[in-house]
Amino acid sequence: MPDLSDKHTLIIRSGNIHNFSQILTSHLGDVTKLHFGQLGIRSLYISPKWISLKAEANQIFELVIEELPDAVYEDLSFEDVNIAKARNFINRSSYEENPDDEKNEVETTTLADEPMKKQDVNELLLLNLANNKLKSIKNLKYLSKLRELLLDGNQIEFIEMETFAGMKKLKKLSLTRNEISRISTKDPTNFFALEKLSLAFNKLKILEIKNWEMVQLTQLDVSHNQLVQMDAATLDQFVSLEKLAMANNSWQCEWLDEAMKGINGAFVSLEDSQETCASEQYDVKGFCCSYFHQVEDDPVNTLDRIKRIEEANQRLKADMSKNIDSFQKDWSTKWQTLQDRAEQKMKPYREMEEKMLKDDNSKTKKAVKDFEALIDECQKLLDQIIAANAKNKEYTQKFTNLFHATLAEKNKLMSEMSKAAALEEEIKKYEVSVKAANN
Image (cartoon, rainbow, N blue to C red; front, side, top):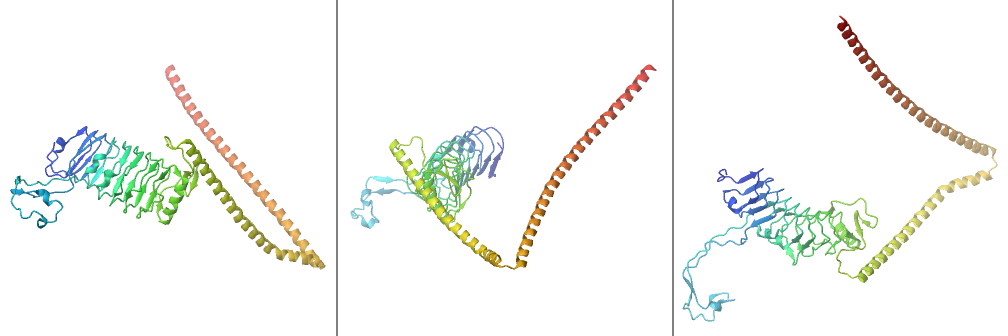
């Protein structure tokens, strides 16, 4: 291995290292930034002093991470201190509160001078393990300084959000394209700095978010799952949310409709939508949903399921009836308005017609007849123009066809002439060879 004593960055582009162990790590000197290519790594030890690690597209299924405390103690020592009746000092704010302060003599217990040495913490800030074979990530909780964590394209099936709770500076967490079917958050958990969270392309059906405290979250992607709903009525808890992707799920219409009201009111930008929905689904502002779902292993008994279906059917009928009534009222008003406007437009002409019928003036009648004759002539001329235009199109098409046919025949003729010329050349060569043979 080359001398790395004065190096801080290490890039290994190719090779074969199945077990990147602690022993191997001990030979890396002062290296703190590592980027591994496709080395076939299966087991990976993460040194506490590393600050950046990229190991995409390997075979990693095991991570070895040291459990180190967040707190650092330094230069704390006891020099021949004897403790007398230590139980009397419990929950006391000072020595003066000791009820036995008259007893200053020491008894039994002695702590020798043994300083507590400074202990390292895991310094890792960036970890990219995309496209590996990780199934469990519980020990990532020891990487408390992480700011960016990329775990896309692994085989993770279950997530406990408490794993990331100690990462107080984590800004980006991406878990796209895993096998995640459930995310658990048992207690309210504050993700102080998290700005971007992606859970796209997983197998989530219900997302438990009510215990997520993410005041800095600006981007959330839950698209391409099997989500029916979230366990909160709206997304109002994400006060900084700016961009949301949530298409291609199995949303429940009532939850989606309520959530969309909050989203629109919060001026959140929707990053995706669906152009078409399945025949049994409905479109709610660009997202497909259903009024009821039959979930596998649903604990609800059959009678309750039938009741929910009937309730959904009643709601659907009520919505449809309401929409039909609204449509009829709206178009009735529009039709009446249209009739009124038509009546106003026709009124002057009717008045003129009545006046002309009553008028015996022969000139007026003649002018009307002449005008009608002119209209007839114009109509005939228009018909002739339309017919001529159709004829012109027909002749144009025939001419085009004739042109292409002529061109095709020309090409064939040129091809035949080329063949004839080639044949003539061959005959000449043959005659020359025959003469040469006879001589």
